[in-house]
Structures are given as C-alpha cells and as structure tokens.
Length: 241
Length: 253
Image 1 (cartoon, chains in turn yellow, green):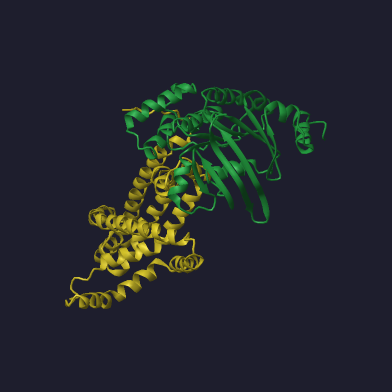
Image 2: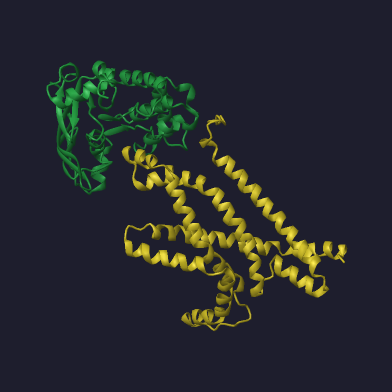
C-alpha cells in the first residue's frame, strides 16, 4: 500500500537537502569546465607526444564509472589528507574529513573529458573564415579568440553544456554511497527510518524531475537568446545606446 | 608614373607536391585597379593570400608602402604590421556572425586601430552609407542577403584605410542577380582612387573597371597589360584559349 502522508512528509527533508545537491552540481561542473578547458588545449597541442598522452588520460577518465571514482577517492581521503597536513607540519584529525570536496573532485574528474570534447567541437564548429577575417585585419590570435571566436563557441556549446549539466545533476545522487547527505541520501535515510521505501523514493524522483526541468528550461532560454544572430528569420533590431 | 605601393617579388609557394606559385613578380602603383584573371588552379587566390600572409609563401618578398617583409618571416609583429596596410574582401564574405553590420565595420577600428567607440561609430556609419546599407546597420549578417553581406564587408575593409584592398573572388558565391550590386559597389570604391587587387571571373567587369589586367596560369604571370591588351588582344596561346572558353562556353564542349 502506498502511504500518501509519508510520501508528502518525505518532501521536507529531501527539499532541505537540495542545496547540497546543487552545490555538488555547480561546484563539480565549474571544476570540470576548468579542467575541460585545460584538457582541450592539451588535446589540440601541436606536439604529438602531448596529444597522445592526454588522449590516453581522457580515455582513462571516461572509461571509469563515477561510483568507482567516488569509492577510490573516499577510501584515500584520510591517507591523502594526513600526507598533505604533514607537509605543513600539522596534524590531521579525521573528525572533519572533507568528504564533500573529494566527491566534487571525483565527479568533476569524470566529466572533464566530456567538457573538453565539447570545447573542441565548439571550436571546430566556428567557420574557418571567421578567424581568417580576424587575421586578415591584423587581430592578434588572442584578440580574435576573445572578441570573435570564443563568443561564437559559447553559443555552439550551450546545448551540449546544458546536457552535461543535467546529467551531472543526476549523477550527484551517487555520492550518497560515500555518506554525503544530498537529496538521494536523505531520501534513503528517511525511507529506512520509516520503513517506507517506495514513498520516499518516488518523492525523491519527483523532486529530481522538477529540478531537472527547471534547468532544462533555463538552458533552453539561454540557447534561444544567445543564438539569435544565427537565425535569419527572427529579425531583432537591438536597441543601441 | 605614380609611386609604387605593392611589390610582389619572386614569390614561390607549394602545397605538398603541388607547386602553386612559381616565381610571381607583380608591381602595382598607387591608385591602380588590378584585376587578376586565370583558370582555376592557376594560383591567383593563393597569390592574393600570400600578400597578407594568410598563406605565407615559401620564398620571396612582399613590399607594401615601402615596408618589405620576407615571406619566411616568423616575427608576428612584422607580419601583422604589413597586414594592417591591407584589407581583404573574401569570397564567402566572412563577416563576424556575432556582430551586427555596423559592429562588423567598427570591430577593426576598435581592436586594431584602438579608435574610441563614438568616433568608430561615426566612421562606420559613413562607410555603411557609402555602400547604401545604413538602414541595415543593426542587422546581423544572417539577416542580410549575400550581396548586402558583401557590401558590408567592403565597408569593413574601407574604414581601415588600407594601402591596398584585396578582393578574393568577391562575386563568386553570389546569386547572379546580386552580382550587379556588388560590382557597382566595387566600381564606386575604385573611383575614390584606392589601390585594389581583384581576383575575379567577371571579364566584363575587368574590361570596364580595371586599369590593368594580369593573366595568371601555372603559378606565373603570363600576361600583364591594359584590359584591352590582355582581354581583347591576348598575345599568348594560354590566355587566348582561356578567354575563348569564357566568352564562348559552348564552343569548347
């Protein structure tokens, strides 16, 4: 039997855990994007050796399930932190272990190669003639990237980035396996305490879907706005100052 | 005779096993409108692109307005300084897609010439007016026809006040009914006395607007003279055969 009152009660703790889920998502995607920018530069480096090495690195990172990353990182926290502290002559106490930080690191590491691919394909999607025109007019490479190429790359990358973002949002649910009390972990706790599993998990599913849809709408909006200039039909004369 | 503005000296270029340019020598005086004709694969576009180092040549020198740069020059600053004496109009327009028409014209002024925004806007408006597109100033390239885009790109080249404007087949990507407006625009620019090098297949335009016609084939200059000399009275067999084919497409079939 489906107990409706437990179903509705479980919303409260799960929604309270939403900030943790959002922090995990935003921090991981930000870190993954930074890593992705660096990795994309390394993957397109003129030196073949560098390219080959980081192709292997990228493939390695892609090939490992996120849960495995989380377990490996979580198991090594104490050892790594103790080493790190001893470098600065400090003693590490495992009472406040940075579990969340390590989970963020693990999540971002597995998304880094995908974001690097996204950046490379966005670069390739900007027509060659755009940078040629910059060069012909005497722009430096940096000026061309900053004013012409990167703004166009961002427009190309937004739909892709939105997909990675919502995927990562869902993937943060795995961090409950390393004791992080985000939405999924909270739902599981609530379910165990009340012995009402179906109710708590369906509530959790519903909340994930709502958050997902909000971000979908958000990225859809950004996509339509930023891509305006590529649409011949939509005449939009901008107000000028 | 007027002073020299552009000298292409002994330029060689190869792509892999393909020798595209085999010692090109061209000298152009200020105010000349030089049209370069030739069959496809004759190296005319490549030659144009070696002038502003978009495709640096393997050997030779380029002199523009008294500044000589060796084609193998690796110093980016020198190459950029030479480039800034030129401006280019591309076959595919290559307008900045994320900029409106007026922003396209302003971009080089703001970034390369470091002109203040207000002044750049004034200059850009005058230039857009000259090509008859002031009413389209706030439109993005995707919202303009090919002919309009090419006219914006001509305005974009003009405002840089280059010593020489390079046109790379400016009408080849256009629908036939749009070719006229762009050619008219180029003709108007030519009247202002600016030096132009135009690679094109428009023989009629060459005949009427050029002050000099150069015929290239096999990576070298084959004929070099007034439009009348080159187009109506070609001396070499290669030029004769090419013009025959262009003027009379069905005869060669």
